[in-house]
Image (tube, rainbow over all chains, first blue to last red; front, side, top):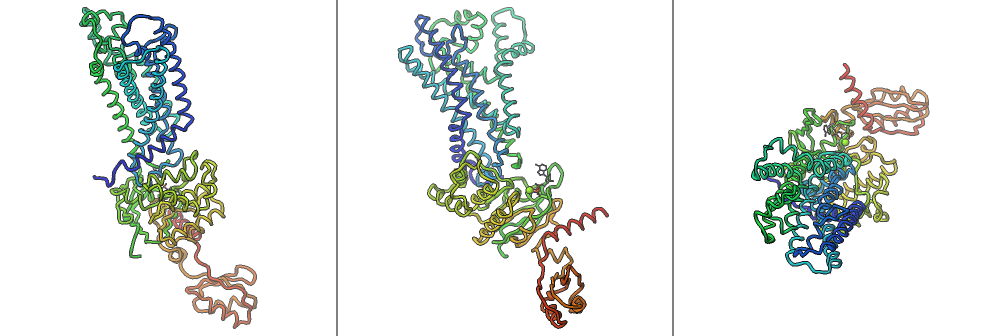
Length: 324
Length: 314
Ligand SMILES: Nc1ncnc2c1ncn2[C@@H]1O[C@H](COP(=O)(O)OP(=O)(O)OP(=O)(O)O)[C@@H](O)[C@H]1O
Ligand SMILES: [Mg+2]
């Protein structure tokens, strides 16, 4: 059945109102400062670390994002993988159900717009609000780096850092779509928040612990050669990738470190086996585009997950009664 | 009534197999005020939501201003204003900002928007407090703000769900006046309510809902004849001897009932006031008051559901 009129009608109006709500709201303010303060602290620590290691590094500037301190083993990138979902859930958990509880939904939907416009406008506005704060944070970081390290980043470093910014926004999108799905399914914002936060804890803390164990149940555990080891690692990696946080970390570790030539390298390094890879392909850093291509699948995965979750929320919303 | 703005034919709504609305048919003419009445859970709100395309129609069809609310919801919603029961606004925004948002959704140009908003807020007496957050508004003010939204929208039909519920008598009167104002502007009104005597004073026609069906439909006078057994009730207040017997002789009078000192109530087949006055004077009585009662919707409603309940029990 063809519907009359455009489903986009009203998206602009919804977007502007929601964005201004986010930007002026107390919640955004609190979440933003939480991220900014912890991020600056993390970067400060990593700057101390970078200054102490005087080794020649052509990509010193990128270390700003990835270097973990000695006392505080937390890099900026790791911090983001942890905090960005929190911000997304914070903005998204009551996007739809609050319209029910405020009893505004039927009034708004009796205006000449489709439900699509309301949902899409809300998603875009929240994502834009997050993107704005991430951009501000990113600029702050670059500025901080310029001041303290005293050397300008190269073009390639800026390009890599930009990719990281964009990927972080996609990563925020996944969690936002998830939070929005729950805000559609559950009428109570508290329930929606709780379920979303539960999933966040599961994926960021429990899944990294359990997924290797589950992977080993399915894959073989006999390791006779390096080949076998790589096989086991791939299965484990496949399982880990169910978590968007794992995808994000993989992308960031490759994009921000030109010396990484395979997505398995950080894993091997963690096992103290980095020499295998390094030995096999010695030398030169990976060109920018090669790095991006290496994790292209993961980037697409993040986008696909966002779309899937959004469509899920859309389907639930379409069939929902407008009455509270 | 040759131009019909709302035409519902056999509207039916199933919730998990239960019939919330069952084969409801009615029409609303241009410039008419039509009332949906009935006890809680009778299906009034569900009917309204189907007409607006806000909930799926399980069976039957509706045309609103010639459009199908299922296939052409935007065309319907562009010309229909809806005031939901217990209407909600964004509490942290001012009344004006709330209306601005709606105006943007409707798609008014910027210049048109401000003029319309100011005009609508004036009409509902909210112009002075329009800058305050709606969170500080009373129930009555919110209701009026909801009406302002409809006024701003330039609609052909206003659908009001329980517009007077929770309002004090004064606020109710004011709101009903505004509804009459809508009619004067040529807007057709569909409203649902529990306040029967109030509804009676504004509605041209009503439909009485029960268990998802329309039990009765028509003007209040028609329903009165149908349910209360027809006839006119004439109240006579006069001093004199043996007036009751004289009045009973008047042609058309079916019964005479004393309702107080010097006061009787006649039930008649027609308006017997002229003859009754003549009879009182002829008997040497002094006539003080003579009035004919309109059938009250309250009486119709109570009687109908009483009878119906009795039939259920039997
Ligand atoms: N989402 C729903 N799921 C199942 N049943 C529902 C749903 N919404 C309404 N109903 C049922 O439909 C029937 C009609 O409800 P409706 O709200 O239309 O009545 P109403 O006449 O507006 O009553 P009120 O005067 O209380 O507003 C009720 O029996 C109600 O229980
Ligand atoms: Mg109702």
